[in-house]
Length: 160
Image (cartoon, rainbow, N blue to C red; front, side, top):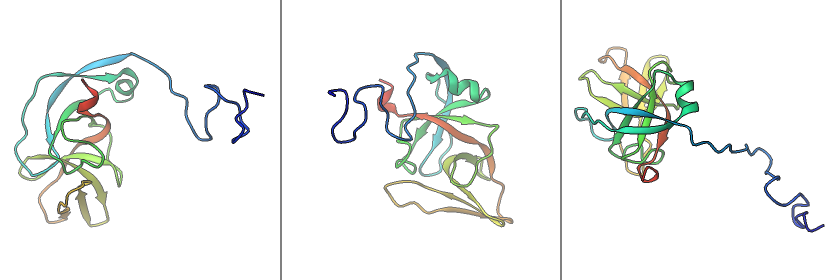
């Protein structure tokens, strides 16, 4: 009887998981990727190159074989991805509404924002604790090139 939780009436211990929970599999398998540069999640400025390695889980790399890592600079996505984090960007994945995408604007500056595309407009929206104006593009505005969709990130504080 001491193996049954008196409140939930379910077994105690590591063999019990709440409904909807997924088991966690421990793995030390990571793949080092070279960071190609920085992507701005703030004011638009030119990209900067950086050269250091980021450890990414092998399963993520296997699912996104052409992905590359970028370092986040700026805070317009800090509700989701803090400044200094590394993001893995898949150039083969088209963003869906609500996805976090890395795009280049007409003046060839890369920016990371939430992607919302309607029938005639594209809105790139910040997800920040601060106020940022949405970037809205129409059919007659300059081109916006999708660099890729963010598929994984690692907070800078977790890399130490």
